[in-house]
Amino acid sequence: MTYKFVHQLTSQQIVELVDMYKNEFWSKQRTYQDVEKMLKASDIILGLVDNEDKLVGFTRVLTDFVYRATIYDVIIKPSHRNQRLGVKLMDGIVNHPQLKQVEHIALFCLPEMITFYERWGFTTNVGNLKLMYRYNHLDQEKNNDY
Image (cartoon, rainbow, N blue to C red; front, side, top):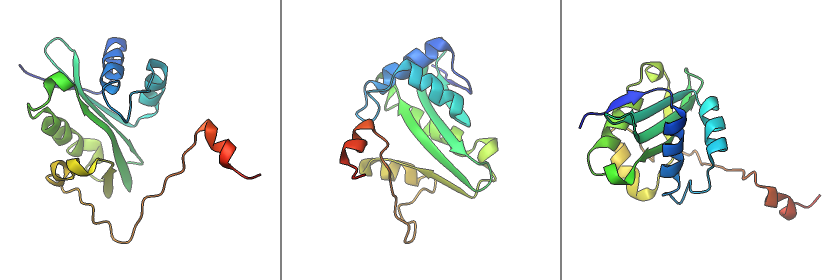
């Protein structure tokens, strides 16, 4: 089977992406409406589709196209894993023409995925920088002292 890249998802492919998200602990709560909104706000979208234009892989990037870019949501449909499609997807995104001049590209991954991403030059050695998060959930208000 051959696969090709798409840079925009059809309504049916968005449904397929939401279905893929439902299989992952980090994205199972995502809804069609939220994913549609997310896609509109993403700077680069890279979908991997089969001969029938069914979505089998996906990733996206937020970037300023000069200094920073962050890759999000690298995902392959469970039935299509272990076919090197993740490699094809990552090759496509790190070699994307709009990212060639970007100074730093970041991504988030589980510890067991670090060796997978190292082949593209990603490293956990980022000097003395520390990742900080601010969780923006409604229940956060309960924990704030005003």
